[in-house]
Image (tube, rainbow, N blue to C red; front, side, top):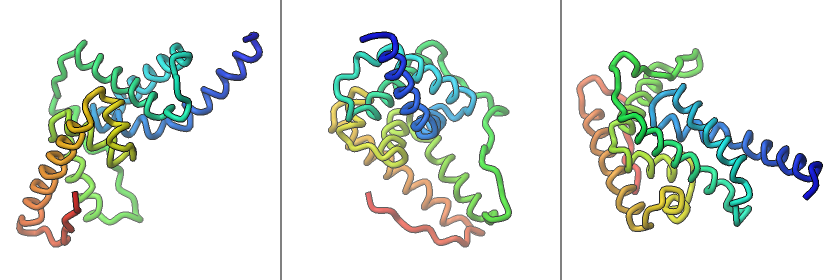
Amino acid sequence: MNPIERLCKRRELGKHLEERRGRLHRIANSWCRSRSLADDLVQEAFAKALRHFGQLREPQAFDAWLFHILHHCWVDHCRRERPSEDIDSFSNTTELSAEQPQERMDIVYRVRAAIAGLPVGQREVLTLVDLAGFSYAEVAMILEIPTGTVTSRISRAREALRDQLMLLAERPGNVVPMRIARA
């Protein structure tokens, strides 16, 4: 392949990466609960994707391949730095606006806090399936775990969320009716 063809292919890859930046960032942020770390993880995933683009065997699996790289970046980060959270660094990143009532933002905050309280494995599977929209088989490939493990983790995560959110609905002063989602 001549240099011009490589440049065109690299530009096309850059376009595909940029289109997926938002999804990658949302998933990384849900895993690490830090916007700046999520930025770093996405940037590292992009750099690795650019370096190892030749290893992509199935172009139709580009998204799963990219999220697989992101997951490896996350795992590498966790290995490098045993994560510890400073209570001051954990904040609600949701901004209130005139269009969204306080009650709705309170619910969003509570759901995010409930998801953040899940064990890492359950949180990873839940965000990839329910937020990113990947199939169980794709999540199994991304995380390098059996499909059965994906199924059990998602089931446990949804059950834990349901239990946590039902407790919130039972507190006095919570007037917003909560609907039980089917697993």
